[in-house]
Length: 79
Ligand code: SF4
Image (cartoon, rainbow, N blue to C red):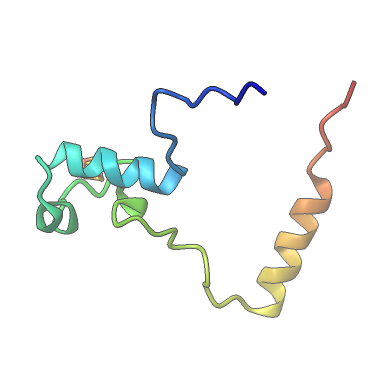
């Protein structure tokens, strides 16, 4: 039985990939990533390997707004 070939590149989650990129940007210095002054960088909110939007407390209105937005999102066409 043939086994599935393993990818030669390590597969990372998007957050881990961003964290790795930020560590690379700061020569591997975790403290420098924490102190990053580039607040206009698009990776800045995710540089610590966490999604700042997860676990966020939302009001009832904010939740209903998100629900409405999800309902408006068109489903991808299959086939
Ligand atoms: S957020 Fe800071 S450390 Fe991360 S890529 Fe951007 S500039 Fe570099």
